[in-house]
Image (tube, rainbow, N blue to C red; front, top):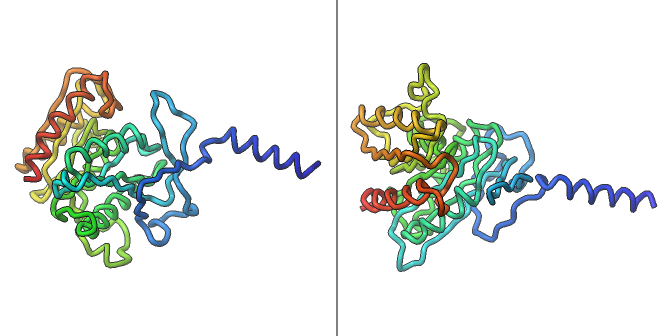
Length: 288
């Protein structure tokens, strides 16, 4: 009787805490780190899905074993380029479907090989930077396996994922973790970046560019999209664009009047329906 009661209690706790239920996905997975991720103290496990499914968004958190999930285009559509997607979520969660899987399928139709990154959350911005740098290196090392040009690798991020993509594009000369194998000999510089409603770009004094974002003549070209009614990204997008222009880095900036924040590319939002059209044209030009 006592055993049965304990089993029942365990079952109830498991149901009530569905944040302990890892997302299952049948996509091909690439694990970023052979051993524990740098400075990671928690045991490796799959990401957990949160209880919050508002707005029909699947949210992951507690990432301790970062991965990339691979989405390949039809062979006859393969354009020879690849994109690593960084979902947003305030560095606390990952909006994995809205700003990950749905974007990957769109990019596949354009011919890109796509890697959806589950970087470390919550509250681990250094770990997230470690993860995107390692992800770019792994992607470059696997270019022959997936039939794309290793010098046509981009990053595409939303909100905090846009911040992470900007950090990857401006910190590629910084060793943020100890190199451990031959993969770490590859460059972690992305060849282009797409930032959609990017956050945390103007954290400097008096709304200046975030100090970590060091622009040089080696910073890759960027496409930036925001809306005036989005306090998370409107000023930051302007600040970063000006910094890029000051260094004569190619940048295409679009600021729409309305649209808000966190819309992905789902229909019914003018911003969500606009940026993919503009980004598609820019991407086709940048990978020529």
